Length: 78
Image (tube, rainbow, N blue to C red; front, side, top):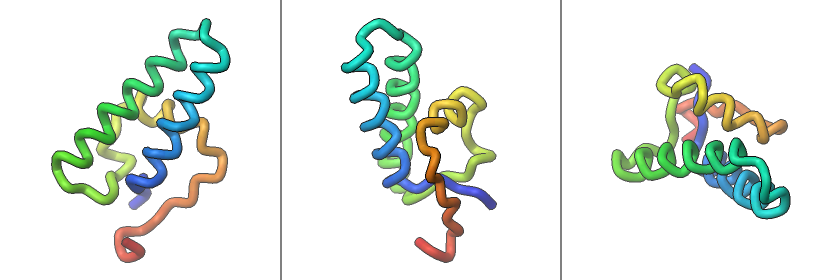
């Protein structure tokens, strides 16, 4: 199963915050950051170190498009 780790979520949030701060005109970038921040909070609340791609909404998956170097971890790696 393909998963995203908490570290990948943190990296994606950081990217969108930086990108939005630089562009300042694209509300879609702010939405990406908001989606990933909500996902991050959900993962922390449920003490999840990772989340399966099949558990994400299509818009959450799209928000990860900034991570060109995604390495899909397996649960055994965590």
